[in-house]
Length: 459
Image 1: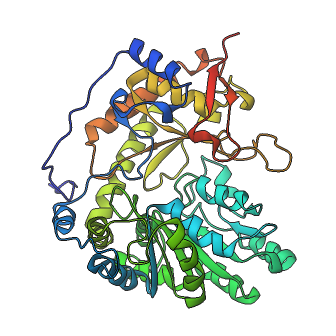
Image 2: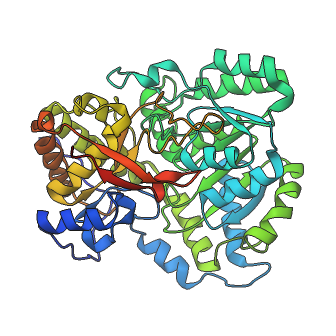
């Protein structure tokens, strides 16, 4: 008999979870203005809102925290982290920040000015927000195939090189850098092939432009290169990561994902001029250069987490749990962005709630229904997250309307995956009974999905 796959860890500590009643959840949602970000954590049974900072750290990480150096300047923990990042990526210059959006804020404060154009593959919410806040344009150059959620394509998050080259040919003087998100979250956690990274590098070199990797889930991207791209099956994850970053000039990182920590981020680059420019903004925005927005013990835990997660056993355990959940949804016929990505299931709300017009935000409505069904909290990655066009102020309905169910790292068992799948199945089975969605009653100008206030449409 073949030995089945099992997790590459054992559980040493548990946190009790409380089940609630549907009546309680109805009240809690109303109190939260039908925004799932407004719920308290104790009002959630299984939390799939995000995989950012929600995972469990290892014994090695906790041990590293005990010896972390809390020096304001010259922290030993910083130099341990810098060495790890350099060994994995080849980047010499490192600036710690308190999380990924802080890294974007610091680096973009140096690089982005009004009127600039930043092409890339489906900029995520904070990336787009930091670009548009500076009166620049985030130009989506993702391959068109990403919009067909039922199409099976191994690297569905890629940059369309024809779109990218057209942008550079027409606007090179306005493009300070290209951004490549690995994996492509907004397109459904979809990876980018090594070939595509090489091709983007060649285009950048042709026009004298640099490349930034948005790297929150770079290890997952490396895993998909190993398992899906010819020529990489025998490479280690660390070897693949090193090659990936050979095609980049710098990176922003939310360490709360593939860094396996609960808070932290960083900027890393091979270019001294970028480092010197970003330094000017790190100190007033984040802190001194050898801690940025992080304390020493968290930098020590991050150094270990980056090293652990770039081992096959760790990342494979994580991705196989997401694949387990995807197999359940296949069994129930529930449409999601295919093939399944590495950190979440992205359910295609436009194919589930077909009675609800886009103006009533089907994905947000579906996320609410799944929470009401079983206390499972997901996140809308769709028309609300897309914000309004900064010029016309019209809602942007051109992209996908997905509900993301993120799986926290090393936190839930496959029994929890069964609950998530059953909740989705129950809502899917009664999908034709759901005829009205939600409307916005208050929103902020940028990144509105975090604080938007909604009402159910009942008439």
